[in-house]
Image 1: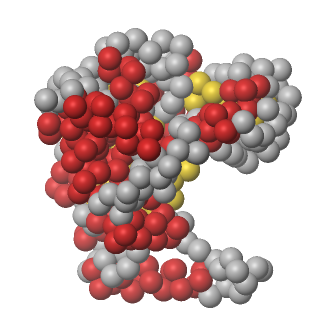
Image 2: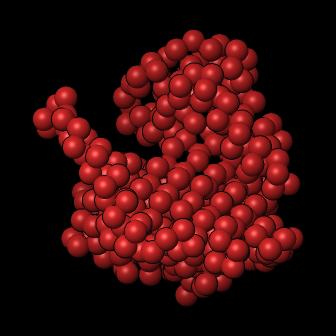
Length: 349
């Protein structure tokens, strides 16, 4: 999006949800499904994760228009065991499938103490932290992951064979801020490299390689090459683990079987996700969990900072502070994103 465009007026969360819902209705989704999608993307924006927020109306919309994504997906949930649910997304919009899987895992965890949902037939489902927050607010600790289009070479390999599969962890705190860790397996997401290309700026040479495996500062060469995994061979192993759970065990596509939404926008990707939830109420009271979570954070915050201007933080604090600020003061969407949302919303009639 053009960063030079004049800023728009701040919008409330309710206004963003209403506009996002109408926009996806304009792209053919039923109202309830569109609301599910908007919920995840708006939370991403309020967290400050705008590369995965309502700006996704562009990429999701392009694929909806060519029926690469099914706008009227009939998502189904099959209880194959007391604590296990299999979710078939029917090639629906990713956040819609993600919300169905989250609710299915919550239902199973509430009944059994732990619940697992494996989803297939899905697409890009946004960032993980919105799902982790919703789970934490309902009292569930979570491990959530998804596989992705291939953008990373196997460790020591020379072509892309695995995706930048994200994984997230969440632990609730009834009397304070939950722990939220949301990370991809690469040093940065491709969206950051695409943004650098749009802005005409160089990238650090630790982000990606060119198509020949050489480190590069050129975002165009990086997009034609491979992302670098965080932690080298350890990040490679973690990415494989996520794909085994999200893709292989869920009966979705995995590794090179996942189609690229860029190269084949009109074809289903069959992405997979997994949601592992634990009902913390079976472990102890809310007072017990609050005391331990606050003590946990205090131990970390108590470490003297190397840089006095950068105190020690717990994962999720930055995003949750942005969420609180945006809920109080409103969020200013990118003007180009806002225009596209309004254009799609107008199609809803």
